[in-house]
Length: 303
Image (cartoon, rainbow, N blue to C red):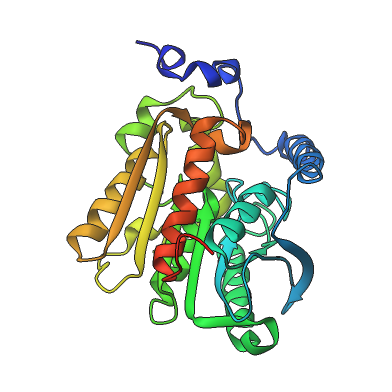
């Protein structure tokens, strides 16, 4: 059965969609994505969530407040293969997390490769985390209930923060995360899938690492000891080159004694929640993420 046949009918219109990360195409791809996400951000229903812009030690951030102060907080890292995206990239997802988790989400506009290869993005994510902790009283944050979250490449940054700052972070929420620079069966199988494919994965790592050595800060799956990591909620797509590294990472966390919940969404491709945010599977994802956050933050399901 072909990948197109395995796609849910609601996503088959994306069958020919590809992400071209070649260096000569990056400016065009960036401009197109930024315009599309900016247009989409203006249509997002933010009922129940206040949104403001701020600066976190030199990193532009967007703060989404979905709960009373002092609230649980999430440091959020956006998607974009380390080379694309800005604060509009996952605007809808941040609104959903703030509203569903009744918490404050702080999304950072980290520097992008190849102009700023690793460790620039990770340094910026760390700066945002440190700023949130240092200014928690002024920001109205409960640092005893601090989580990290990220989608795709942002999942690598979030997982890296969870590893490096495990004593400060109580929960990690990773959606279709980038975790491993090494080949997996799914990166080899899905070499022509919508949204993201094997060749795009290879180019992503080439841009991000810029020929440098790989560490767990860059590729969290390279961490050899996951004991003591924050509890995790991991979601991924069935037809995604990143699928196997998400599943493998969840299994390793479980074997290390870390409470971990894993969901694989059938018939979906990478980025389905951005391509079709109103689709029932995307709404299910947002609902599951919100419920997981409320449990982690010890919040009631209502009220």
